[in-house]
Length: 450
Image 1 (cartoon, one colour):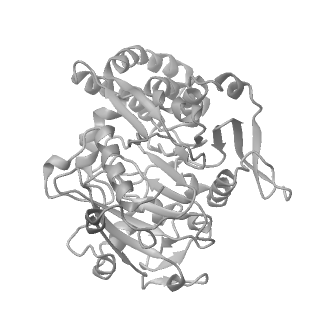
Image 2: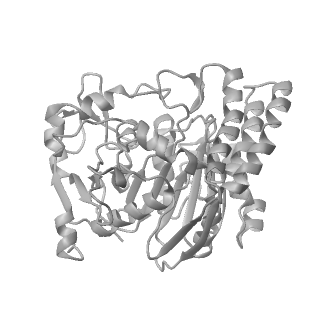
């Protein structure tokens, strides 16, 4: 796997009120049924105490996307270790082009990989409180593939259309969101965290005006409509926002008159980030407390080793596919699309009562909490003034302060302490508690045992 020059992470979760798995509901058409190829599985190398895998529903499969030439989207689906009535979580990793298996095995999935290629139960896996699905998207990511190059996606509109096809077929009811605000926040965050000095700060800030100018020309999202009556549909965003497109949610992209402006914006704005890295040295930009080791700043090699084992691929039904954790081709195809402003679509969600939680780890540089909090606070919606003036409260877990929470109405922002970009990896118990309280409508409550 080649090194990605700047891996922009994206993690989005869509939560639904309850499970409607294909095994339990009728597909809308016979064609939809034929497009879905799924199998139940149990990894043979799972060890340790805990509920038996044979007692749980673990599924993997492909869905043949109907509006593509030959694209097949791969997914894992794990039924809750608690109740089948728990909400459904759809986890989408970013990169772009990185498999959601990264989160499955290193963050919030049911198990983790040991160095001897055996699996152990993750006591803080999000399947403790939800039915969770990990999807490899866009096409070309992880085990998702197409035999036709015309299925390569170059923007979020194409990706969201594919995802909508996938969700229709499945029959279920830590981010660059506003680049102009978030690139401006990089020098401020770097200075606050003592990654750069005041003279460096002044110099790097001079790089922002041309970045800002080009971002304005790059494009934005417009014509956003919402028609969801079920208020138990949520967006949980860790750092980024992805466009979700369907008959209920309509997104269109107002692109630049000259497409090269997005490419120019990318180079100008990247210079801000790279200038900080040049000064800070070999830091892990996902967690500034650590060194950057390897192409992704972490050693995730066990994922590729495990998922490329013949025995594992046979169990999953992907014998003819070679698993790659992150795809350079997908990454490169979508680079310019990162410069688009997706924040403008979010207020419509809030106005319709769709609950939104944005969370960010305090030691994450690339999608830092400061930039995320700024776009959240500057977002124009009817509750903006009340949100900005709302009291910040401690997020307590087991009597310990794990973060700072600000909420009003449908919108919440959580800064997670002692965590980098991968919050469930760094603060697994706090992340699981966050999910539980948020889906139960108790995020603002301080538990009695605290």
